[in-house]
Image (cartoon, rainbow, N blue to C red; front, top):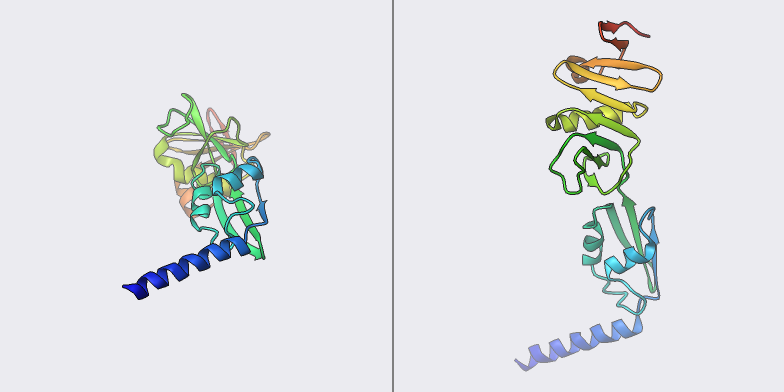
Length: 192
């Protein structure tokens, strides 16, 4: 019993000494685009004077829980320095139609490339179709990043590239064929 108590007292003393002898002098944040670095450091719970040696791994989990953050990496590049590297989610598509996502507006929601909803108002492209096709629509948007609007239904996919439109049948999507031709009310023309 006395050995366990003595060991606990020794460990407590070492922890306290390491906290006082090796404090965090600086918290660096890299990769932040829309969130201020101070907010990310506060979210992590890291501050100057905190324990450098025992900077908690839970700090990275707290930052990763933020809806704008896609990835987090916590490192100690130097004595007294803690570095938080983040990759933020970016608006990728505007999914039109009522969805059950948090933050969804009545007419749609902004998603990142992985399909996570964001509290944003604009995205570089629009997708319109049934929500059961979300994964295929995102894959199509990644395959053709210059398409500004992708509309689809049971017959296939219509891609609007600004000055030209293309149509892609479901079978073409599965085979990976590029979109060809132009879509008209009377049918599809052959294109380059």
